[in-house]
Length: 512
Image 1 (cartoon, rainbow, N blue to C red):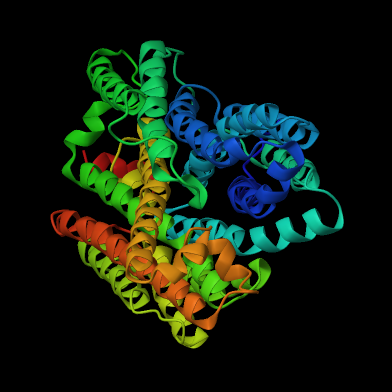
Image 2 (spheres, rainbow, N blue to C red; image 1 turned 120 degrees about the horizontal axis):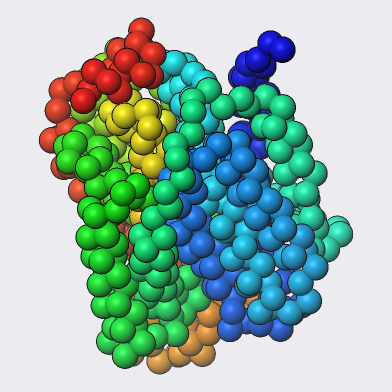
């Protein structure tokens, strides 16, 4: 019987669908969350519905990435898809906020498989230049989700029920599973199973404890933090998490088949790419998640309309991603990374000049510039990493880059949210001391007051806007600074250039 070959079209569509609904589930839930918590009566767990998804996703990324190197990639992808599907069904059926949080955690585990394996499977079937282009399109799925999420979430919640934001995943997941199952054929022999259980346990507990500190202190999702950095619980989690992560590194140097091979980081290029990916996620995703706040709180736009105002960001990312394969193999990758990162820094510096009177055209230009930088960087970081490691470690290396970016995004959202909340609170207290008449207005939730200004004097409303915009200025400046750190590291990556003519096996061999 003739051996079936991989159908690239089916696989590409399948992984695009998987990435879309895995990333869409973060933005779509944010829109419906106020209704969900009101219905289930769990305001205290508001942030956990979002945070637990990101936590389990970060834990799952390196583990599933490594399992895909040991076992059949298609089967591991299907297992991850199964986790996401079961989690979605349980979320839709949840009648209690605790059950919803648990189900979201199951969803996150599945997303931890879908994200790295999508890029790894693309690496298996496309050449360097083709892969960079395809991964640019895959990267745009994150941008599309940020725009479609508010619109879909709002429509389903208002016209059907919030339960349907989870049930809508079922047909998409089944279609993606069918395409991958039929289209993808494993091209390489799998290794003898040797699972690094101690590495998996210490990594899981270390990431969980460390990221919990940012969730507990950062005011996730714009809500006040429940603990301070000096509280015993936070200190215990932070110290324990760092100790466990240090233990994980030690275990990985001794393990027969480590989840995250430490020798990968002996290569200067892959080490720098991991750091760049972390700081890019730290400064970029955190700040982007707060862009709609300016549009909704200052410009008085609806959630759906503010989502559409991010179109320049998505279009910039898609255009740059499509041309990413062309430029990646024709320019030295240090120049490419530095220029793209500097473009993002410039975009955030431009955003730090926003005022209540800033035109939407200016805002769109800022978002477009950031999108162009993102569109080049996201596929470039993944492709460079895959090209500079042995073929047997592609899954682990791809998962590593996604892990660092995911950790950066998770910490960034909490960190920047905490900075915004802290400055807004401090400025509100300062304004009250200067003008006691504002106490009644400024003591309430400023975002609610900005969105519903009825009964507020013009003087008080202007004070609210100034306080909120100043907080956003600090947030965008901090984002620019964090990405500038990535620029500094990128300068030391070397002057190499990828070859578009070599297949994957030759590129990885020639680099080692």
